[in-house]
Length: 232
Image (cartoon, rainbow, N blue to C red; front, side, top):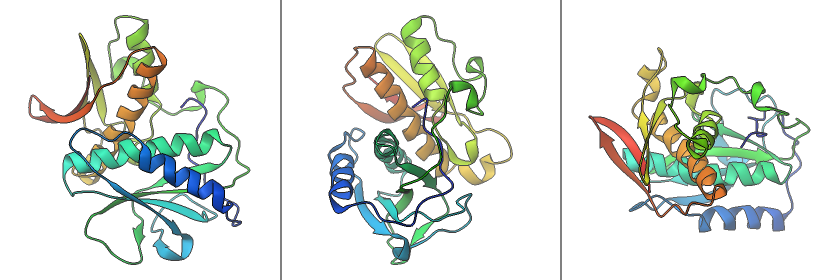
């Protein structure tokens, strides 16, 4: 989580079939949010339209998430594909979230895609390289365990880097609440903020697991009228 970066340059050479099958198998077997079921498929560069993005050299591979077109469905797409994002980068490859891309064969349940492939771009060397809000803008952790979760969420990628969340800690419960920020909220609130919260929930879940706490479920809910995800 603290070394990954959004890669802008990819090698056009495809990864070997065994590696692709392993990545697809891992994400399909990954834990999803409570009551949600996303379908993930693998596509080539000829099967997608990239749209506006910061990618300068197109990636050879894309993971596409298809979900119900609901807040919980969008969040689940982020939660599931972020597992692939972290796994891909841990193997030394690069990845990049694409919010404006679409499959060339349209599907009404398409939600978002993740580009990936070989890259020469180095990982981040430290947390200081992330352009993120100060920790106290998103959370008020009271102990070391809560601090670890907040740090993990802070470096999670988000649509247009809006970081549309705040964290509440309670006994046996962590709540990620949608908190739209800046002018970008006019474009991101309905769909992309939910995807971003799902991504952040994956980071929180991993941080909790690393601290020895079992995460039994992630549920979409509301908190004082705002969309939220609860980890228990």
